[in-house]
Length: 324
Image (tube, rainbow, N blue to C red; front, side):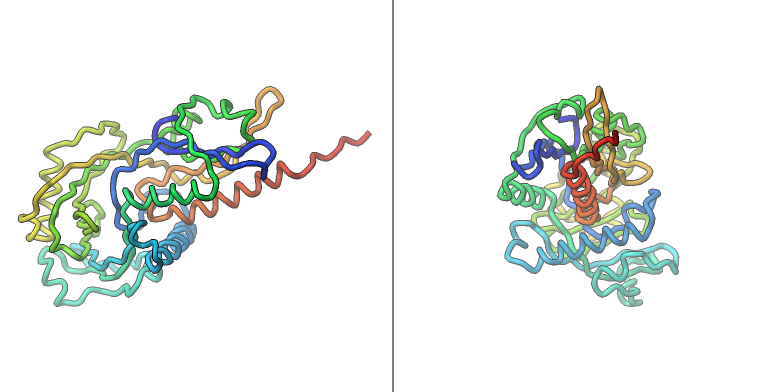
């Protein structure tokens, strides 16, 4: 498998066997699920909102089910604060729960900020949620393989359709030079008294309480592939987060984590028909979510599934006979 991501291949003679999933696990953090993660991309706002709402509905159903604990999906409330008054209403405001302006009493907690929003949303722990999803895939009959490939054509003739979810690996695998890494660094600390999320309006500084730790972030270094933690960045993150929540000076068991976000001008969610030496290989590309992978994942997956179904139907439709 090419680095970073996963790919699904579907067997010859659709409907005769299980899908096969090649994977390379590179999940590195738990994320609070609410931010407008595609604000910097060309993805239209209405499409972002559709994906966001579909994902929220999916996670809301899990949070209200017996699977909530194993999947590590739960509700969390908190504040997004600004240093200046903002009249902009986020596109996700009517999707999350109880979205409103912060009261004067609430703002007293943040003396460096003059405005903010309060709401309740959903949080998932990636380290638990992704294995839970993987287990569901296997229980449905899919076969999981770990393998490195250099070219999608290596999957033929065993498979008729490929879903390419390789993220940053798409630079090498399909030659997409539009995708690039944005390095992110965060801290995982023990501070069990912190129960509410806090996020600075810039999106760079955030405090996300989880089941087993509290996430402190963050950083953005565009084009940086280095996965080594930077001690100076860690000190800066801790300083910024303590300014938002002074009680974090008492946090302990501080651990650094680094990961790469797969950014491009917009999510690549499209069909492509590869052709070589008279052969054809339908591909559904599904990658380039930036920092919004968890925020939009179910919505974009539903759209990818629709594209996949179109490919399956095309394979099942007999080619028209040439007229004599």
